[in-house]
Length: 420
Ligand code: HAM
Image (cartoon, rainbow, N blue to C red; front, side, top):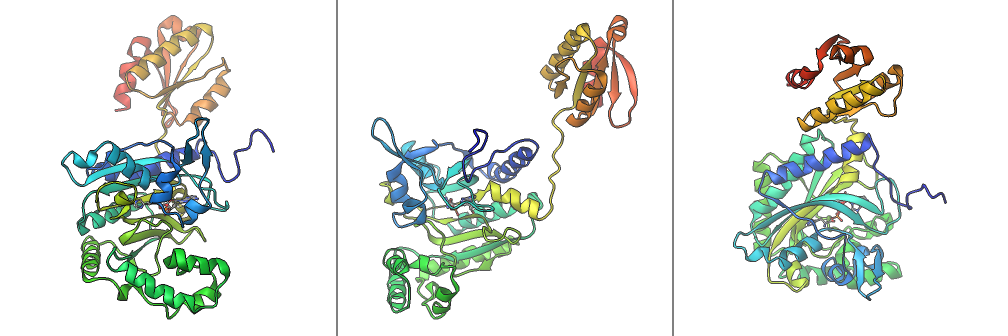
């Protein structure tokens, strides 16, 4: 193992690709900010207990995938595998739900950790942008979140994604269904582990990818037939609101999701260019989570979109984001005196809000102009001894190739004018 190798299942974001990641985060966050969601940031780790209770003792995330550690002080912590439990915990701790304005609408962006088997699109460290709307039961809120995610993906130019939608019922009707499903599953020919799963988390069996299991599930009882009237009406309302907003979705009654806290609305954004790790984002309603972690009743809904997979989706669709170059002006000094003077000019430009960079290290004109080109700067400022003696710098338009001498005292104003 080389010291220069990132840990298994992780990778570094380096320029220029890293710029796309920033742009994706921004594209997902922008519609949220414009819709009343406030930014929240929570620690990268939490007490293990929060995820055990929140995400669910029987989920893969909690049983196999958490990075846990015991601190020197004896605390049991876990690197956060997801954001919802943490955000709800933080909102409860800060009493945001008591401030009078429900729902509490929050968005976040950060790193998450799951000890999964690495493969294309599946990493041990990944990045999500998420949104949670806490404390209100209203189908309009579920619809709002789905519409905002759709809007974010569309703003990036993505087209080959689909929205899968389902309802998982509530604490009235789901237990009845769960029991009916268990009764059905217990009669099937299944391996030991799957049998155990029937007792702990039978809905997850429906998600089994193996063909021989799927074959036996054709006649399994359907959750749709067990939904209580309130859940049915709620779901119909969400569907109608999405349709009214022109958001296309597919009903997918097999959609169960890998976290235990969901009730009623659940959804996933899948992209058809990504192979097996096709879920680019997912979420749903979690009306019971607050109580599961010891809080009051706070029906809530949210989602998280995976930044890594969204970038892969862009690549799969051949979409190159139109990312403006960050540097507008590149200064090339020729000689010691020019170095001091031009660096002063660059500092002045920066203070005036003009993005400027500098040819460091006293390189020759040719090499420095190559760097100027690579920086994408629209203008280069070149100055040698003779220019300085005349009190001017050469201002070169990198697009047209035109060059003119501009008095040192007027460079900033001239550039500000030209750059608009
Ligand atoms: P999730 O479906 O587990 O949901 O994750 C959301 C997204 O994070 C996935 O669709 C995927 O894009 C990305 N993701 C998850 N695991 C990995 C991985 N190992 N490598 C790369 N990307 C990954 C949640 O986390 C819920 N907290 C969503 C939510 C918010 N539900 C309600 N509110």
